[in-house]
Amino acid sequence: MCRNIKPLFNFDPPVTEEEIRLAALQFVRKVSGYNKPSKVNEAVYYAAVEEIANAAAKLLASLETNATPRSRDEQVARAKARAAERFVR
Image (cartoon, rainbow, N blue to C red):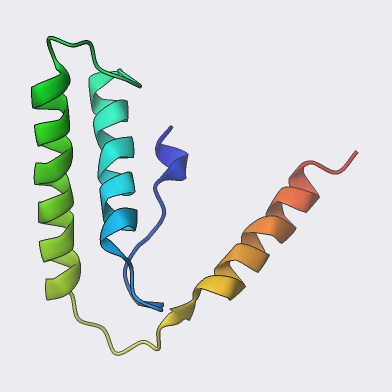
């Protein structure tokens, strides 16, 4: 499950709030063991997602680097090439 959480820092175009929230959701899913919470746990589950998303956004806004931003298109192409090598039949 955590393999779906991708690095979010230093990309061009910059990360969106939705991408941060999706990463936070994946983290909460992994930690809690629930893909979807029960009705009893729903409020605390989604509150945790929002807290983690806020903390991640604050972290990303605070980080500094001298490196040039990475291209999302290049990252996608590399991932597809790695997948093609792994799953060749």
